[in-house]
Image (cartoon, rainbow, N blue to C red; front, side, top):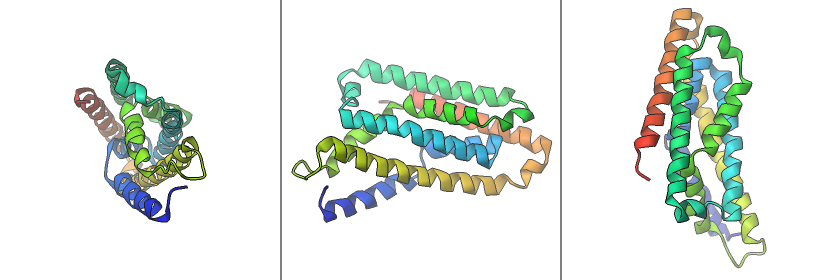
Length: 202
């Protein structure tokens, strides 16, 4: 494994990146606003599981494809943006009883994360800075271990975001009118996030 000094730098840098508000936090907060805290936590689980796809891709060197084939990057980015917009519109049309469908939150969130090429680029750009080619463990294993730690730390930040968002809306969810407003607010956040992803330069 990398040296102690390199690992300290890795943990410190990862913590900074993880706890800076980003798209995953917004997505998890939107799901919490629209469906409640438990659904937000299921969304975090989905994002976490989807993150392992990018960790494995980075370990296998597949993320380099996005650099080599810019068209592929754009296609995946637009697919992810459209999916976010579709999820946001779905929240506008959702009924109160739909909030109980939690398995969909996990599947939706895995899809959102897998269709986020920026995550793949991040792992491919970030992890090599902390890889020690002369270490006992092979490079691919270092990618997996460090990538898993990054994924766990980012997920911990998402959980904190969900808990805070859940605390803010607990009282409001007693009103059916407030529930409709929160679903729509969550839908607005997802649609806005999708539009932002689509228009953001690579």
